[in-house]
Length: 491
Ligand SMILES: Cc1cc2nc3c(=O)[nH]c(=O)nc-3n(C[C@H](O)[C@H](O)[C@H](O)COP(=O)(O)OP(=O)(O)OC[C@H]3O[C@@H](n4cnc5c(N)ncnc54)[C@H](O)[C@@H]3O)c2cc1C
Image 1 (cartoon, rainbow, N blue to C red):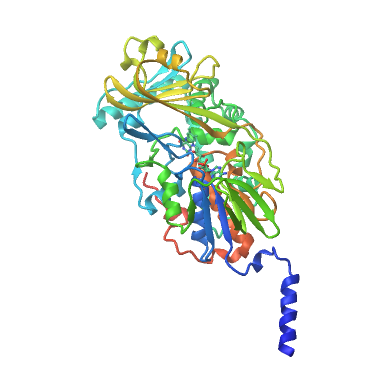
Image 2 (cartoon, rainbow, N blue to C red):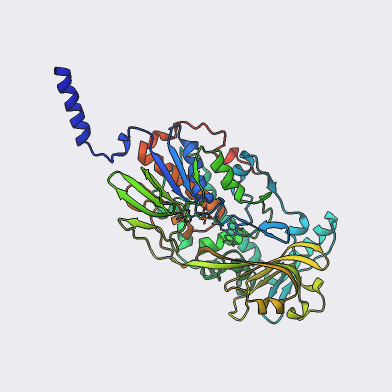
């Protein structure tokens, strides 16, 4: 009799205790991740990496393949990166994913990494570096040296100042790979950026910061403009951190994943014991007492203690109940046009195709209809695959003036990255103060595969620390290294 009274008292206490209290979750929670890009797949990977718990993880992907903005395009039988294409040698998470998951690093051949560059102002080339059709490394080195001297003469020591501006940013970013013993879990994007010393870069436009760093206006109006237009489809008025990241993406030793960067997401998901729901778009996320109900276009509903949004919400149709409120942000659309054919030298006022630089960058002028045109592959003298980036779609009539021949053309309209505007205002990582998380809040800092992975890692740690307290980090069953010293740095 006494024990029965004790039992019902205990039951009563259980019923009266707050049901949403994080440390009291009786069974491992279900985490539902919306989006199978590098952000969502990194959250799944790091949840497993940092916790031995039996957490059930669902990943929902509306398309038939994971990877999101890491995707390939096949044109005339050959496959190329259609979205995110290059990785920096210090993108340590991406390097770890690639080497740790049995993927192969693709380093561009010397001929590819020393593409001749031309800066086009709509009427003429303001600058043209030289290129020689030689596979001999010694010759390539001399050409590269000659081009460096040429750029140094044109832009002076501003080039070195630009390099040191970028290196300063990269050094600070490396703090995100420090051991978790000394690296906090961040509740806000601002806090995360301030801790690494990167926040101030987001408060001013790139142009202002480069002027402060002593760069001359010619370098900013030409080379820097070319780079920000290629990497973010925007001008030098983008915020400073995104600008510095885009400049870092124009350096040497860049790499990609052999066969397609999207495989990082696929491999992370495959190795993380995840229930993957392809072709399943989440339409509604409703907070019901102590769980989230996710409803998909397939008519299915899922109960999850934790919900993670791993896609930009700016153009998303996901509806939230109760509604959430985040700062307004526009996405910059980039039209990627792939053409197999041959450029028309007359369009550039030149006599032969061989005179056209392999990478044509452009300055800021609304009359120039594209941001860049680059050679992806030279099949033979008269047969080349090109990639064009533009802010507006490339009309057929326009393409017919730029190309003398087009065998195949494919156009992709990407809601590519945020339209950067300093001072940046950030959405919260935790959208409702409970367990609704937003990885892509970090994209206002910079949008890259690596920044998504870094944000994904923080979200995974945030989820675990809010569910279980700070001690969660004790064990990891993964064989992945987690400190910068253990990471590959051989690129
Ligand atoms: C043209 C282009 C060039 C780029 N170049 C580079 C580069 O060279 N280097 C670099 O590092 N970065 C580059 N980037 C940026 C990089 O691609 C992104 O920063 C990164 O891939 C973002 O990953 P993510 O997982 O956060 O988002 P995404 O890749 O967008 O993934 C989100 C996923 O969520 C899915 N989804 C959306 N809504 C729903 C829903 N309701 N239900 C289910 N699924 C949903 C989407 O289908 C998508 O697969 C480039 C981007 C573009 C567009």
